[in-house]
Amino acid sequence: MTSVLETSPVCTDIPALLPVVGADTLVPLVDGSSAVYANLDCAASAPALQSVADRIAEVLPLYASVHRGAGYLSQVSTALYESARSTVAAFVGARADDVAIITRNTTDSLNLLAGVVPGPVLVLDVEHHANLLPWVHAARARHRTTILPVAATVAATLDALRAELAANEYALVTVTGASNVTGEALPLGDVVAAAHQAGARVAVDGAQLVPHRGFSLAATGADYVAFSGHKTYAPFGAGALVGRWDWLDAGTPYLAGGGAVRDVRPDRTLWQPAPARHEAGSPNVLGAVALAEACQTLVALPAGELTAHEESLRSRLVAGLEALPGVRVLRVWPDSVDPVGVVSFTVADLDPGLVAAVLSAEHGIGVRDGRFCAHPLLAHLSASDGAVRASVGVGTTSEAVDRLVTALDRLLVDGPAAEYTVVDGCWTVADDPRPLLDVPGLDHLAATAAAACGPAV
Image (cartoon, rainbow, N blue to C red; front, top):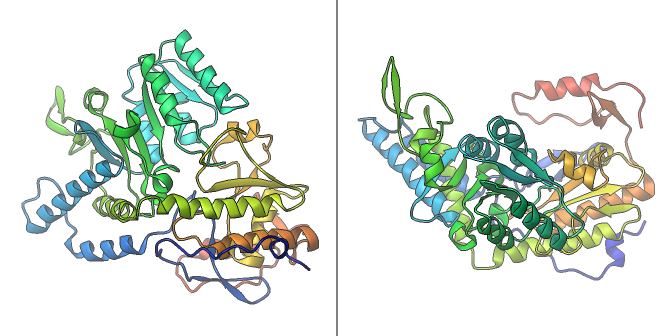
């Protein structure tokens, strides 16, 4: 069989841009062999940078309580935490009077923001649920929330946005910095200009943008940005919300508890100003330090190198996919530019879950399948039954991209090499012969494999 890559122009090998933990991890295949894991699921959770792992190992012996602790290590941990806050704020171009709140992730950040917005919210239907549900539920309980359908082009969508802002008053426009389905986005400069002209602020879901293109509140004029450490090569449970201080300083505290208060009496509570106001309980010191280290590592890259690496991999992936019969690459707008390295596609007559299972079991490739927590967008793209998503990052090489294209080519020509069945809604290998890795805690995976039964496909 001739691979589709063999009939394409010769491409230069693209190495990883930065070392990541697990880059040489071997996974078992159904034929009894093994392969280096090709992690093409960075849009869900990116692997840790090696620099982040090294930093955690360095500071872990220094970990102690933060804020109000008299012990030496408590003072050290407090300094590390507050330094991390400053680094994270600088990474997204925070202005001098902006507030940086350490959260769990983007979802946490946007739910926090939804609790302090003082008026109606405008959001588009292309959003990840993290930037849709908080406004539909939390904000709608207090204010009007409008979900604006996207139009056929970027230009038409911007026109619709401007028209809606002219017709109705909004406190906030919230928009993705890059789609977690297609990598596309509206030009932020145009969105910010339209919103500010109408007297509204702008929040950016930066989960897919910040790790891949960088972002600056000061340069774009946006008012808030939210992003996750686990998508920024720091999977230690921290994220951030950074932006204008006044709503955050005056709004209802996100959590009620210690650290968020100045004084508590039976008849009243005096709250701290932001950021402490929204960080009740013991904070994730190590997560904040990990996120700050990732930010510093990405900032240290030569200008343009991150974008060039990702654009080369994305272009190579899209070209390979579009050369395969029956494969449809999903796009929101034909006139969008500069998408990040997230590519979703469908394969004619094949369930996305089956495609993902074959790629994993037979080729050692990790991708995502389903509707990617963006159900309205998948419906808009005529992919309500789901799609397959491949996403790249700083640790991705051209070998991983080429392996995916070759594997899909083989699947289309020869079909699956193993038998597959659906268990609890997920495709899995029937009578899976692959051994489990020698790691404690895989009991659930073993139970799932044992339960595989029913007609094979």
